[in-house]
Length: 208
Length: 179
Image 1: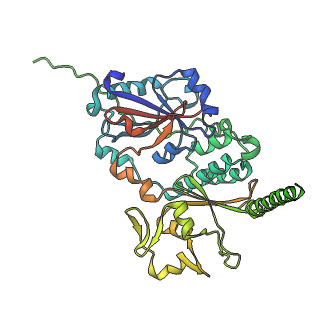
Image 2: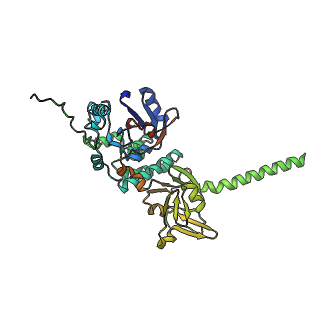
Image 3: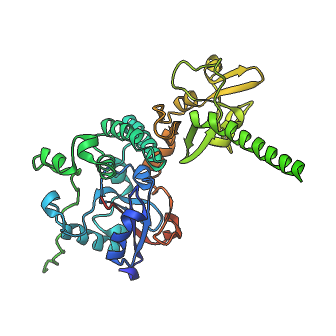
């Protein structure tokens, strides 16, 4: 896909940095750019609430599809029930057709989808940032109460939960685990729904 | 020779004493500000000027060291950016204690609608920490500009990359995690 002026920039949202993300990168032997984001900067900048999340950005640096769950294979399909193929086709269509792709949103459509950050979420991000700072300083006990506060202020943000649980004995420190929380949803998805338009059928030329 | 040894050892003792004197109170409660993701240790106000809440008061020198903002006649400024202090509430922002003027960084954050979080548990490291997030209009600028916020991060070999390097290409920005 390189010839179509298309690049993948993949970012590991891992407080543990290369120590945690490294073995995954080695195993994947990627041909695209992989960056390490120990401070969850991209999550904060783009107001993301889960992984994997993708944003599409055009040649001029404008967003053409905002935050969206982005499974590119079917490894965890049992949990999230989202077909990767549908999404991959959408990416291919955009890579080939650019702004003409039905999947690339116009400025007007994008403005309808992007909303200013809820102040509670902004406060949650500060609590999460503080927790991360404390954790990196070796103040694990102090960090837990701020991870909890971030989770309370923004319960929709699974990054805050899953990262905190992964750094801890989740059962002991948070009284729960990722699997338990997913089971509680009882089949309800823990991602905002994907909003891909139905792919346009290839136009059939009418016979005159 | 003996005199020399005595001199050296007493100098060493002095040095040790100085180091202890400097580190002991610091160990008890360092005050750390995290601003724009950069941590800076700041001085504590005198005990006679105890803030009644969790607000963070800093010297004007520490204000600039920690945040790059400086107090100017027209307001609190960083480069072209200036925020005037509301005249009627000046005392909520500034307080002169003897020769030193203290600035309330928490009140300033509220003025800018900037989220702040505070840890006073004096946990394992005995630090009191104040964390300041981005100002609301900074955080939300892409909602009106529609432009992808830029960032700079290292790859697995430590080489730094900016998103803006990819200008001129379509980019699929994809986040994932090991957890």
